[in-house]
Each structure stands twice: as structure tokens, then as C-alpha cells.
Image 1: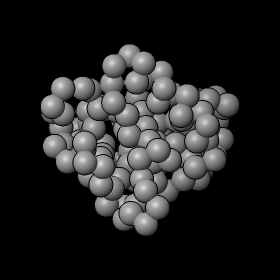
Image 2: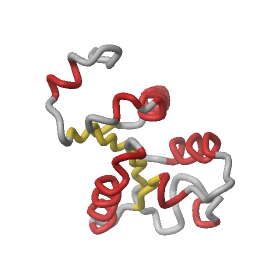
Image 3: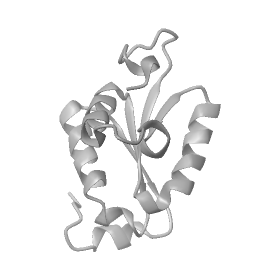
Image 4: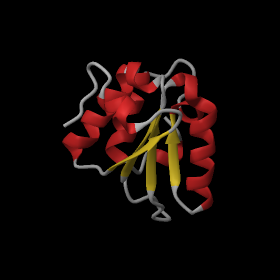
Length: 120
């Protein structure tokens, strides 16, 4: 685990912490979002940047999702097929963490009419 994250919520300098979820095929776009969020003073969690090879992926996700003050979900044509996108939205809902959704490369109608997509 990154040493700077061991303190959990309320970092020493009290930076807002944003967890960014995306399909692995959308890493480039997610990194652009993370850069913009960080330019505005928040810290971000992005699996491609923050999980080291050999780490327990699921455990890191659970820990950082609990620490997050906000979950940003990047919905692209690939995202609805990602189990982790759905799992992390459910986790955020359970924790009461606000979820911000960004739709990129498809319409809201595309999402709502996709079989198996939670639309309620």
C-alpha cells in the first residue's frame, strides 16, 4: 500500500479524495480526468496509477473506495461490461459515497437501454 494512504480519510493536509473508476480500455481518458481533478486540488485514486504489480487488487480497491469522498465513474462503450465498475458503484452506494457519472462516447439512452444496466 502507498505509505501516504495509510492515514485514510482526512489526509495530513486534508485533501479531498476522489476515486476514479473506468474500464481498463479507457485508461487514457481516465488519466486525463485524474489530471484535471488533481489540478483543482484533490487527490485521486486511479487503479492504473496506484496499484502496484503483485498487490491484492480487490483489497486495494476496497480500502481506497472506503477512503474516497467521491466516486467518479467514466461510462464509455466498454464500461458496462466491466464487473468492477458495477461493484464499485454498489460499494459507493453502500458507503453513502456520492457518485459522479461522466458519459463519454455514448448517450445516456445507450446506457439505459443496454441489457443488464441498472437504470433505476
